[in-house]
Image (cartoon, rainbow, N blue to C red; front, side, top):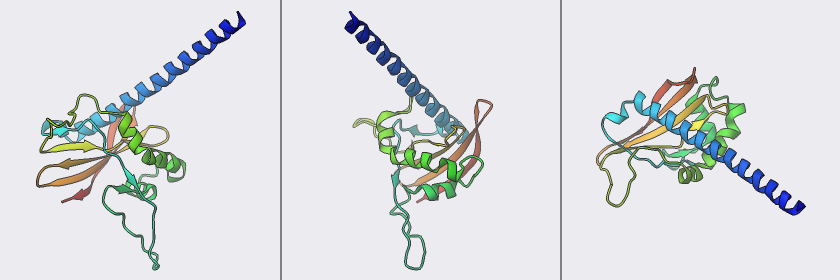
Length: 187
């Protein structure tokens, strides 16, 4: 009898933990879709082209310096280093370099896992039959530790032209507001 009570208690505990994890995951998906939607609205992306439902992932790299003390550039524009990302964001009020650095590093280093787990709802899934000629693709949103600010990078690609942009959004009174928009690359 004790064994069956213990088994029931363990199963109940597992189901409670599963529900909590499921709610946490659902909340994160909702938050991600919310900030990307705001980014789309702020930049009028929904008007013209396809938005891919899979996130691009970040490639990270270690900072290296020449013998003269100059920073060696990354291999390409899509490589990210947390120190350079903090400089790029440049807003100590929203992304405090000391407090948020390890949180930002964790998000960047888990970018491929994030891509496998999350999709943008209601947008185009690229398949063998659907390969758009021009499209937008978003990178994983990078949040500060309090989830009150987010950095979002996205690219526009077509057959002859491409460009990468980023935005910083800040949550104020349950609404995401644009703080900064800037270009990252263009060809």
